[in-house]
Image (cartoon, rainbow, N blue to C red; front, side, top):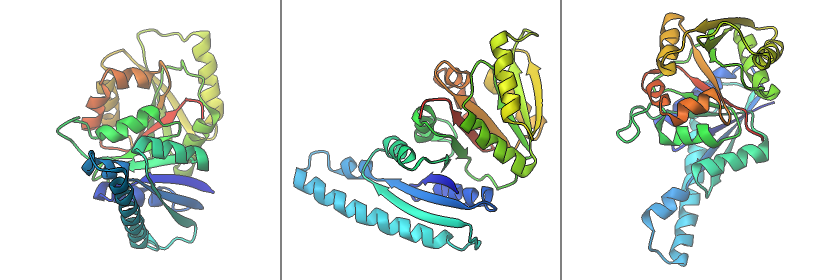
Amino acid sequence: MRTILIPTDFSKNALHALQYAQELYKCERSCFFILHAYMDEVYGEYKAASPEDLEARKQIKKEESEKQLDHLVGAVLGNPPNPLHNFETVAVFDSLVDGINDFVNEMNIDMVIMGTKGETSDHKTTFGSYTIEVFKYLKCPVLAVPEGFEYRQPKVILFPTDYMLPYKRRELKLLGNLARKFKSEVHCLYFTDFEELSMRQMDNKKFLEGSLSGTYLSFGTTSVKNKAEGIMEYVEKNEVGMLVMVNSRHSFFEDMLYRSTVDLLGLKVGIPFLVMQNLNR
C-alpha cells in the first residue's frame, strides 16, 4: 500500500494538494495521512502565559485541530468514491518540519504532498517559506503542488542532473513507478560545457538507466547558464508536466537552494515540483 502524508493548515491550497494526491494515486491502494501541526498556534498568542494557561490552550487547539481534520476528511471522502483509498488524521503539538519528519520516520511514508501558497510578500516564491524548509530538511520525497494547478497526467517529466550523485534506489523507484504508470517521458538534462562524462558520472548514469528501466528515458545536455532560467526554458518548450530534482549535501539542488536561484523557479514554475531526497533515512 502506498503511504502519502499531506500536511494541512486547512487552507484551500492544502485541500488542493489533497485532491491532487487522490487523483495522482486514484488507481493505487493508498493510505493518506492528513497532518496538522499546531504548536505555533499555541505559542503564537501566549508567549508570556503561565504553564497552566499554555496547557489549557494546547488542549483547546488539539480538540479544534481534530475536529477540523475530521471535517476535512468528511469533505473529501467518497468524492470521487474510491475503495482503494483510506484516510487517517494526525494532530501533533510540534513545528511543521519536525512534526512531518517524525511522522515520516515513524510510518515509513513514501511521499509528502503539500500545497503551495502563491507569491508571498516575505519570500516572493511560489513555494513559500514552509515548503522550502520541508524541501531542505525532510528525509522523504516531497511533491509541491502549485496553487491553481489543474490536475493532468505528467506526460513529460524533467529531471535535471549532473550525474554526480549515487542516487537512492528507493527514490528512483518512486520516480520510475510514476513514469511507468502514466507512460511518461523522463528527460534527464545535464548543464555542462564539457562533452565527456567522468567515470563517476558514467557509473551514476548507468545506475540511473538501470533503476528507471521500463520508462521512456532520454538524455540531453545544454550549455551552462543560469540553471533556473535554463530549467524554465526547457519546461516551456517541452510541455513538461512535472519537475524532479534531488536534494543532497553538495548537490545540484542544494547549490540552487542556498544560492536562492530556486526563488526564480518558485516564481515561474507552474507545475508540480518533486524533490527527492538523497539523505539517510
